[in-house]
Length: 426
Image 1 (cartoon, rainbow, N blue to C red):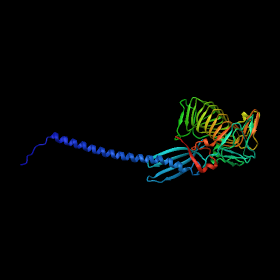
Image 2: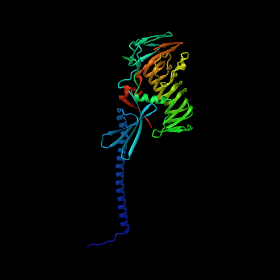
Image 3: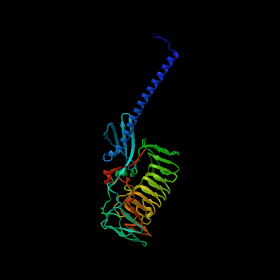
Image 4: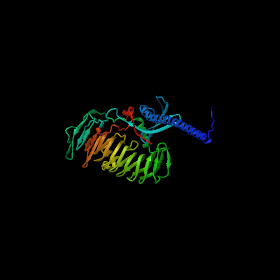
């Protein structure tokens, strides 16, 4: 016989409550699983898009498109990534803008690009004007050297003769009368900057704010222009161009990073630190104890000016000067297209100064310091005790084997087919 009993309402409510809790837990688990998979998918897409920018800039380095044109690159893979690369300039350095996207996910990076030798960078290139390069004092050259047919020769200045058993610690290759060619785009950009009527595009600032400026390369370029400018007690970073009609003075209380300086004359005082591009049409002087980091670019281009030679005071004739105990990582360049003979050095690197990178001089170089990298010059000159020694190196050290294998430098014509990333911007 079946016996029917009433179930209490409280027990039924408890069962329903437990069922609801279980259902909520199951729904929460399903939602969490879906969210995790969706997040993993989105993260995977983001990673693919980010990697697309690296792939894009590497793939674009072999492209010879002119600046201002956009290049489309296809990246093979399961996920279709659209990559666009635009070629431009920041100062004298080539800039690549890479945009990688998939549907609504987009990422943009900016990078500076330079030239690199396909083999080990040479130590020296001296134009062949049918005269030897004379070594005196504690001079030493290590690495491959492109030399005149007369080669290297021992010399003596003020009783200081060449002390080593070998003249060259490396291979010797005959040089030509002319220096290696710079890339056409680089020369055109340099001529543009050295034109007295050049005015950079950007947002014109009325003054530099006391709190400084940090301008991303995602934003429009900011430009500050005045007659003469002294930079002190301020931090300036990024997408900023400083232009002076007469002179820019950089003091050691200023912090400069990646900015561009344009003026006829640029004076960098003692103990300045930072990295920047300085482009002048008359002269650049770097004081003692400065630390200028990679990729610093110091260029004097006098191609649009007539040379005013003053042999009575050679120090007034030099256009690019680096004082003692200064360290520069990047490249220095002097350009002047004149045929008449010059009897003074246009570029001088003092004793105990170190250049880690390159020097390119279309005229005469007086080298007393050290270059860990490459020197390219039309000729050398040494000024000692009131005497002028043509095509002499007195105390200078050149060692290409000490340069980092990751160094990327001057865009020579021979390096166009081997461009490399120099620096990511922000």
